[in-house]
Image (tube, rainbow, N blue to C red; front, side, top):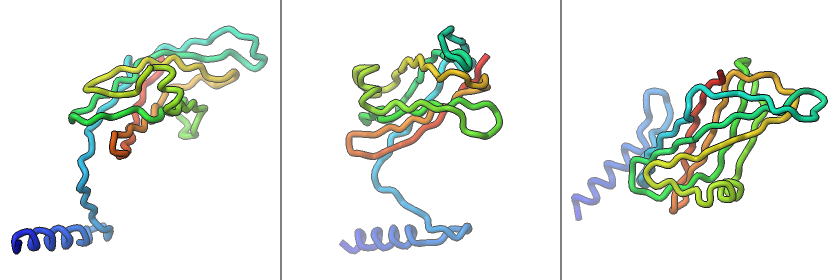
Length: 156
C-alpha cells in the first residue's frame, strides 16, 4: 500500500512540475492510437471540367487518403476538410465532409490497420489554380478520444 501511495505522489509531483518554458507538463493516462496518413499519389492531377460557369471552370482532382493505425484500436474517420492552397499563406477554398457524408461515400469509416479512402472532390468555378491541397482528418476511437492528422500533396 505504501508503494502505491509513493507512486501516486510521484506522478502528481511530475504532473505539476513546471517545464523550462514555464508551462505545466501534462501526463495522459489513456492510450492514444498512433496514426499515420498520406495522400497518394503525392503529385496530383488537376483537371478543369467544362461547365456553364460564367467565371471559369469547375476544378477536380482524384486521390486516395491512406490512413494507417499502429495500435489495435478501432478508429473511425469522423471528418475530413480539404483545403486548396496557392502558396500565399491565405486559406483557399475548402470542402468539409462530415461523418454522415463519409459514411454515405465509403459505407463505414472504420480504419482497421491500413485503409485507403478514395476522394474525387470538385471545387467551385473561377478559382485560381492552386499549388497544393491539404487534408485535415479528424479521427475518433470507440471511447471518444479524438486525434487530428494533417497531410498534403502538390498539383502537377
